[in-house]
Image (tube, rainbow, N blue to C red):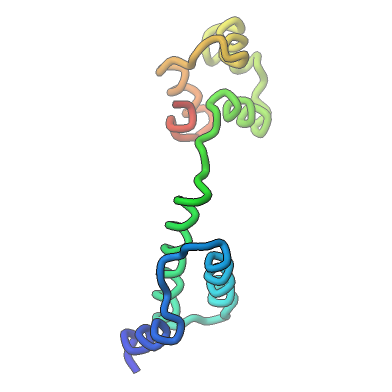
Length: 129
């Protein structure tokens, strides 16, 4: 049996379609977990897994969107996680006054600040925009 035929059989057994409810979402997630738990998947099962993942992602993006974090909250979390002190940040950004104003929300990060923070923490500029 070819991969295409095996894939067609998987599709005809379960007839996947767009997800419209939390119940359907849970069903598809359970099926994905079953496929992931297999010690060895066929190429057809890999294709089917990819299809289910796309359907799940689409539903979750529409019904459970993840909002971008607040740039200042993200900065504080990065500082905490990496052990960067306010003093070190002051050296990087130019002064303790700037850092204090940024962390209190009284001052926005400049493009130069964002570039330096991205280099320091190894993150995308999108995090601070």
